[in-house]
Length: 298
Image (cartoon, rainbow, N blue to C red; front, top):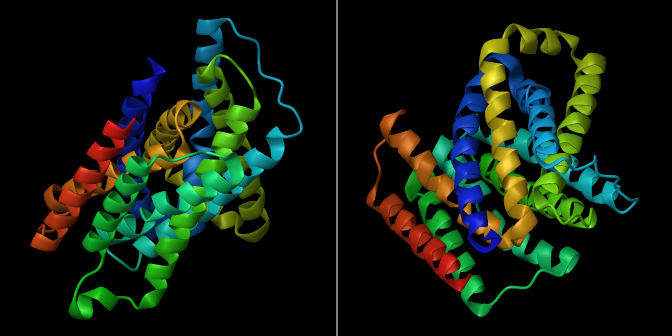
């Protein structure tokens, strides 16, 4: 059963994350990059706690007791995720929504390498081909000829690529934390890790803003209505990411997550009213082929 559930988990997570990214992009105009980044964790943590309470009540399982090896993994996951989110929002301020998401989604190749080195995850030849085709599709979508290719300079491109690397390290950290718990119930392990990560992230960024920019904290609470929605979507996306990480390799999950580019393209076309070029259509086709090959390989 869990052999195919990771596909469902990943698609739900990608859809929720696309909606959250769009909301956080709007929040950067009023809260700044760090403030908009904090919204995901500060307002997501209460929802994570509700998820965990529901899981523990439904399963009757006790609260997990992590060993020492758990903490380096969770710290890697949470710190890399903070950096990745901040870099993503900063890049979105200088490039289009779709272009930023596309650069970030070079992540699967990076996470495949991280997974092999740090977790011992293995990839079949078919999975490797699928990752390369889907990632190439993202690059085709992101690279534009002429002046459009360098709009905003090299800085947003580097920030997007760095964000992808940080998201990759974050995925490896969280998967390592979930597996290190050694629980038979992967739902409990995933949800517990979600809560620990969100609470630590919320505490760390709250302390940072309180010391460096207390006005930003006030602005965040004043924008509580959209922040609650963004926090819920962030917690929901993370819940399903973690469930997927619990039952499949991080490389597989993050490659299938390239469907997020398709969701972003839909938002760009139908909400932001930005047309789809033939080059973008080719990139979409390559992503779809890569994703289909990946699912077939499993």
